[in-house]
Amino acid sequence: MTVVLLISGSTRAASTNSAALRTVRAIAPGSVETLWYDGLPELPAFSPDDDGAGHPSVLALRDRLSRADAVLLCTPEYAGTLPGSLKNLLDWTVGTGDLYGKPTAWLTVAVAGRGDGATTTLGSVLGYLGADVVPEACVRLPVLREDIGPDGLVPDTGFRLGALDALNLLVEHAQRVTP
Image 1 (cartoon, helix red, strand yellow):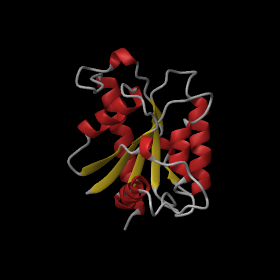
Image 2 (tube, one colour):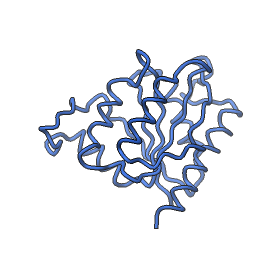
Image 3 (cartoon, rainbow, N blue to C red):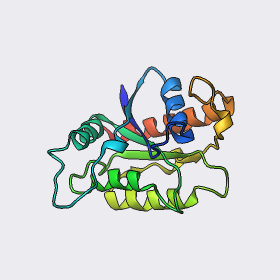
C-alpha cells in the first residue's frame, strides 16, 4: 500500500483546491491510502529558533509527512505567489528534512493564465527542500467554484480522469524509489 499525503494550500472553507484533493481522495484506488492534512490554519509562524517540538500542529504535520510515501499538493495563488500559510508549512520542513527525497507533485486548478506564480514558487521551494518533484504528475486541471458538487467533490469526468492519472504517476514513481 502506498500512502499519499494530500495538502491543500488554501484555508478557505469552499476552496476549489481542497475540493480537488477531496476528489482525489474519493477516487484513489484501493492500493493507495490517502492521508488528509488539515492543520494549515493552526500552524504557528515558523521561527528558526523553534524546533516545533512544543506545537501539536507541527508534530501532526511531521507525523503525517513521516507516514507518507508521497505528497500531493494543490494550492491557490495569492499576490502572485504561494499563500503565506503554505509557505509557512514548507518552512517548518527545512530543518528536519521532512520532504527531502519524498516524491511530490501538485495539481493546479486555476484556469490557464492564472496560478503560474504559485506553481513556479512551489517548484522552487520544493527544489530547495530536496523534494523529489515528479514533473509528469504536476498537472493543470481547472476547477471553477460552480464545478463543485453538493458533496464537495468535483464530479467532472475529465477532471477525475486527469487527477487519477496524476495520482497514479506519483504513486508509480514512489513505488520505484521506495524500497
